[in-house]
Length: 94
Image (cartoon, rainbow, N blue to C red; front, side):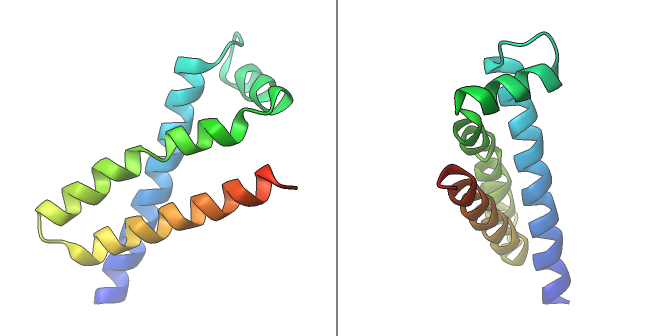
């Protein structure tokens, strides 16, 4: 059952990162739409920075799971954060 909790944490972490990226695009984006803001961010080279800002929502999910004694889910959120960080590094340096 522990693996199921870790997988749930990973899914929640990835969803939180996606929501955070969407919110950062809405807040910091300069385009008329979300798609336009995404294209502008990629063209200006700030997409990876927005992904990093978006991953901050994982911090809230992590501490929520720690405070409710769901360490396996917190571990999953941490794994999702590492996955997002690795993807960000790969995008940034290719």
